[in-house]
Image (cartoon, rainbow, N blue to C red; front, side, top):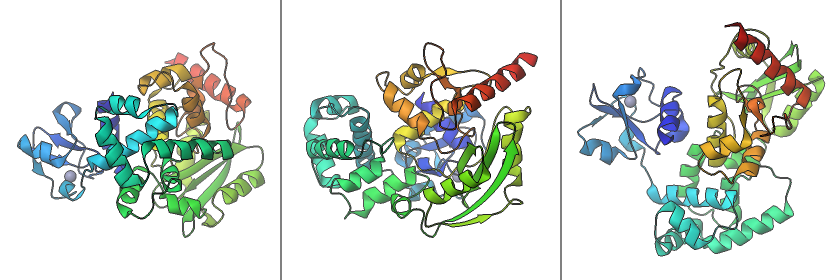
Length: 348
Ligand SMILES: [Zn+2]
């Protein structure tokens, strides 16, 4: 399953995975980082390594185009991020259960976490509990923000490593997208008005509503400090691809994304993108796929915090009793999307 995730990162040149692993190509004996722009290799020739060193031990050479060695894998940072994710999924995790799941000793986890974050895992947990209590409405939980809130902030190391995993750095997010430039276009679809907004890196928002005014004011609210401008021409292809998905026969949207996400949300969203057109999955199934069948509620929250309708097809997740459950953009829209997909997939 991890390999699936890695392979997806490779074919989508996903920068956020740089540093997390490298991929090596058997036929050329060269290894690359996930975002390398070189021609995608055949799946069967690819092997994954957690670090450049491991790839080199197997006789692979670093690619000259993407310079994968410069992307240093930081196992300790990785360990800290994974610890935070586990705490986020289940705040009742103890130091022992965390260490067991991460396959490290409690002493090592305690020391590493405290050194990098600035507080112990126990203290971090207490802070999270308090923050959750204070702010139940904050959906999903921004792990990087959470790390900051817990006393971390002086070391830039974790910041850099963590922000690489996100579409947007947390500081930019906090300032409401300050200095970001966002282009948007609004169109009419058969399920209502749709806005598509993008930064220079990819789509940052896709929303549906009854009126164009509502869509635009919601975008401005989400990014109050960004420079926002209407650019119909620039976004024409993106819009067409999504509209063809809603109304026509485009079964897979393959567009670049620039979204804020915790590593947990990213993993859920990757799974959502694997649900085939015309099919549905339950929250339980997604939770099991990401390796934590108890995380059903966290999965539901991750679906609800999706910022890009259709591009990440959260509408394909339903309750285990077959009922539709909610949809951020209205359950009637979810129903018609699923009906449209079902009717198209029956035809072939
Ligand atoms: Zn390369």
